[in-house]
Image 1 (cartoon, rainbow, N blue to C red):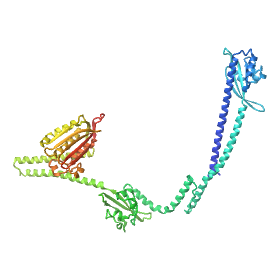
Image 2 (image 1 turned 180 degrees about the horizontal axis):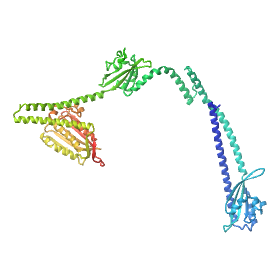
Image 3 (image 1 turned 60 degrees about the vertical axis):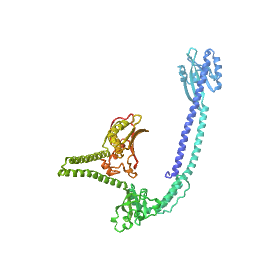
Image 4 (image 1 turned 120 degrees about the vertical axis):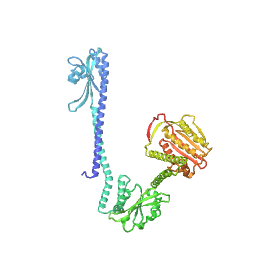
Amino acid sequence: MFKSIRIKMITIYFLLIFIAMVIVGVFIIQQFESYHLGVERNNIMQVSNSVSATLQNMDWEEQQDEAQETIGLYERVGMEIYIVEKDSNFKIVASTNPAHRNKNATHILEPELILGAFNGEEMEKDMVSSGQQSVRSKNMAFPLYDEASRISGVIYVRRDLGDIYQTLYQSRIILVQSTVVALMVTIVLGYFIAASITGPIRDVTSKASQMASGDFNQVVEVKSNDEIGQLASMFNYLTARLKTSLQEISNEKQKLDAILTYMADGVVATSMEGNLVHINPRALSMLSLDRKQSQQMVFDEIFHASSPALCLKDFQGDPSGWSGSEILAMRDGRKIRASYAPYRNEKEEMEGLIFLLQDITEHEKLETIRKEFVANVSHELKTPLTTIKSYTETMLEGGVDDPEMQQQFLSVIDSEADRMARLVRDLLQLSNMDFRQTQWEQGPINLPELTRKTLTTMEHTVKSKNLQLVYQPPEEIILTNGDEDAIEQVILNILSNAIKYTPEEGEIRVYLQKENESAALTIQDNGIGIPSQDLPRVFERFYRVDKARSREQGGTGLGLSIAQQIMEAHGGTLHLYSREDKGTRVIMRFPLREKETETGVILS
């Protein structure tokens, strides 16, 4: 019976409403009863207090008739009120029921309440009288005090609760009737709601059963846009897709796995006929194609233009040679390595080729720089070694007898040895900085003072060329943080270049100023300048604008490269601006020292 979703849903709705109505009904009845009993209790206490206050002002023990008249005034409140005298007979002195006057209270009223009240306690008890009709009543007894605060009697009040419980009884009947009506409505509504849900489900189940038998021409009628309607729509979509996809799934699986394997770089997949099967966005970017255009292209149109070695006719016959790689030379100068391999279907038949494309332009550039660097180092070492070797052999063979000539030869040898030492020192410094093995002492650097010190060092050289050196110091002290010797090396390198390449009677200007959060030290000359085509390469290692002149003046071609790396290690920048035959301007920007910066050692 409960295997049906419809029956389950109706049962669940029925139980939910039934439980909710029972809980709500019990709660309402309890609250109703508690409220009314509380109200009656408060009323009894108010009446008792009123009676007590009235009797306290009269000698009711002597004036019992007057006390009876006073109690008679309370007949309209709907309560029975008794005044019990404190004697051995517990005589009722006054009562709203005159028939009980002068009788023993313990025969008419609840003895334990009277005794408790005479002991000074406020007593309360709900009672049900026996008989043909049970009557509920609330009984309360209060001690009555005289002017000396002594207990002189008891006020006993009884309130009939029959009207309250009759109201509660009617309320229960109404709640039961409401529950029955609600449950009947629930059953009817639950039936229709369950039918609206289970009907489409039964339809989908029936169609699915027929599909399991091999009939895929099944369509479920969509009657709504809710979850059931979405289920029907998805079932119809799944049916349509299933018909066209089942045959393709096994063939596409291996192709998809292979393509996804190479998604890190450009991936291109083609069929054996050369038609494009798949190309990812990275491959489109590498080959400078747009997706719409590429869909109409075939193998040779994609690869043959950039690499004649890749041609579709070469991938015929024996498939053992179908794996390999070629370098594609693109029109914009980029180089792309195309690694290729065939892919097969589940029958081990060749389906096509997959190409993995890797942009190796940057790798080739780095390799070229490495080769140039090795060649430059070899050349720079070869020249002084050749000179030293030839001069030394000449002297060893005794070909130089003149002491003055010998001194000249030794000077040349010493000069070339110094040149090699400078080259090795610069190379070692660059190597240490490349591998972050240089230790920079961290401390405050007074830039105006350091600049002045460096200018003083080069003062003799400046005067020997009859140059005009103008220094414009700042009006305030400017501090940066770093290795003072390293910063001095940078300033000295830039200044010595300005002196070397400024003709006699030229002018060099040096000025230092604050710029927001940095300090800018500018060295500007009106020397020979640098051609515009050479400016992008001035910071490359071993690069010289005029190799012959630089070598004659003792340069290694590493100075600017070292200076730039020192500046970067200290969080600064180095910029060079120049025009041929107009001069050069170099700006060194240093981060300003913060007050909390501490001295120490850092690795670079």
